[in-house]
Image (cartoon, rainbow, N blue to C red):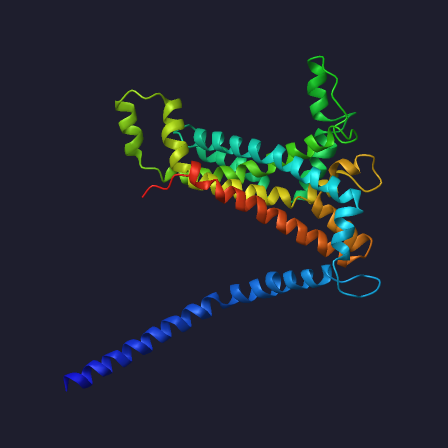
Length: 305
């Protein structure tokens, strides 16, 4: 009788376990299907297209040979992409960290300030670029040059000077992303136990030292995530470059990024094979930089166990 009951209970447990797994797979099925249809299948299609010649239809690495040896715009786009990343990621992350630290304090109107900083994220990137281009950066009637003229400084041509336009785009990108990164870092700071700060105050540790030796180490996992995501977004930059310069503008070579080059080759020149090769290279570049960041993770990211 005992053996029968044990087997019966085991059978019921097995059915319950099977039911739980079935429900689990049912809930994640839409996400998995979306990932397969929208990401995995297009990736392999891009790889296949990049290995096909547009004119002969024969397989090969001709697109990659052209990309690395014959296309000067490709190397200029790589340089522009890396410059944009260097201009936006360090500045954006540092500002986000400072603003998060300030808004983590008990100050009047704290929730209002959080909403104001987060507001640029809900605006369409194209609309943001147009407002900055015509209202702020316009060399004749722009708000920024007007402020500079009030202190006796002649402002540059923010959107028509090839030596300045990348800085203009970087300013808009940082302004648009600081709020989102700040919210993430603020959430990480609020998870730090208050007992660390209380002990530091008892020992006479200054606020700056608390920020350096307590806040930054304990928020470093969130900070690492922010750096990773911000780097990926910077390497995929397209919309601001597209809105600030067309291919007929003299500033175009200075702002064309890898994704912009992919857009022109695929949808303007109607050569998706070469465009796919550019996308695959961009993916490899992102993977390489991400791998380097993970390699250095152990040197500065602290996980409190």
